Picture 1 (cartoon, rainbow, N blue to C red):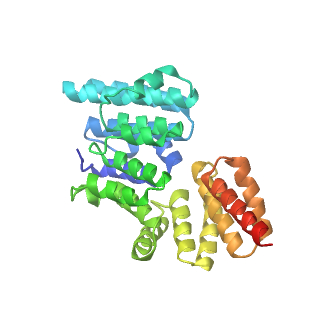
Picture 2 (cartoon, rainbow, N blue to C red):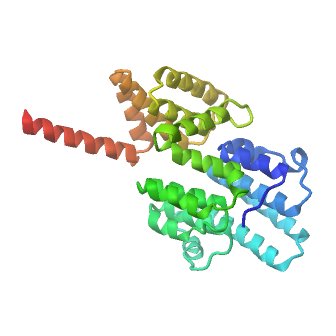
Picture 3 (cartoon, helix red, strand yellow):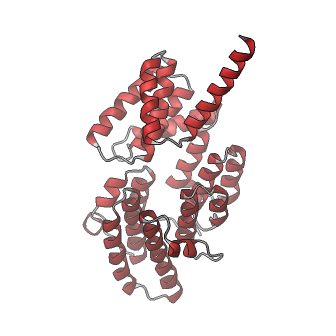
Length: 316
């Protein structure tokens, strides 16, 4: 079921989808946003918990989980109460897994055939994705539940190099006109468009340019996506300008999420090679290898280098 959130929850979603996790985690939801519905406040706090988990702030996440438990006293509907309790349980198991990948209870919990609710299925997908089992992760998702399951399904399909299937996955699972007019849908569709060229790439560029130009939505994630669009559109001077903006942004936000650092490095490497600054590109490559030695980009680069060496050896 797709919900049209209140203004307050929309603000939370906007911050979360733009990957401003530190801001989300530290927000004072009670005083900064006045929720008139306990369920919306519960869901908003869940986004805070997830932000803490993404930032590896496990103690803070557990504190907020306990805070959300207190909110359950204001829920009278039994089926809704069961649903919300399941969400908290899934967050607890996922937090335990992140701290200990060999946690057997988490494996048992997320390995079940029946998973209640969108967040539980989403975290089950995240659990298996962390184990590099993308196929099982995809099967665990319940795209009929919410847009986040759909978005993560698209992400997994892109990781599996099944771009066309990712587009079909989005269209198949988002057939509600109101759902298509949300920040979650716009972010997911723009991200898919970023993987293509032509009009789709242009639409993605305008989307991330708009987000990156607003103080409410500017983030390392949006800037990296904008940088990618510029590179694919062969806008090299503009790409350098975005890199300068990223440097300034990182200086002001030193604890930006690390998983976007790899994407940033890859784009920097590409631009340096385009600019024929090979020595600088090699330095960045070494940095990427140290930071994320299993990155798919490095494997792809190694395969292409091996192929090139084979051709040279054959025709030399």
